[in-house]
Length: 83
Image 1 (cartoon, rainbow, N blue to C red):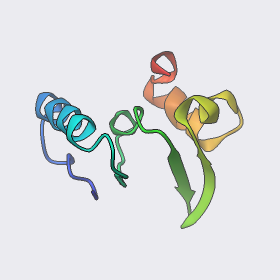
Image 2: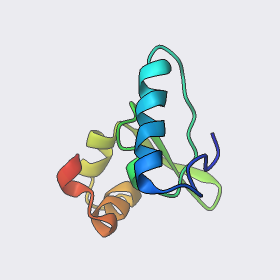
Image 3: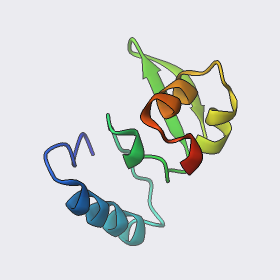
Image 4: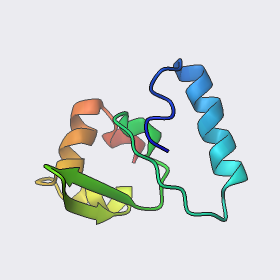
């Protein structure tokens, strides 16, 4: 899904994310997102920079690297306490 929730309010986005998690729990879901909160529940996150993969791991593992791109995004977005 490429920016499937970009134009909807946060309450609707939350409902949609819950439905995706429930209905696709046994499937691979590829989500492209600018809102970090959209992917925090993902099993794995691939971080791209300038078209290249710079990080790929679970959100909890990625946030442990304080010099990493994902850590910085999580810090700037106020998500560190949610991981």
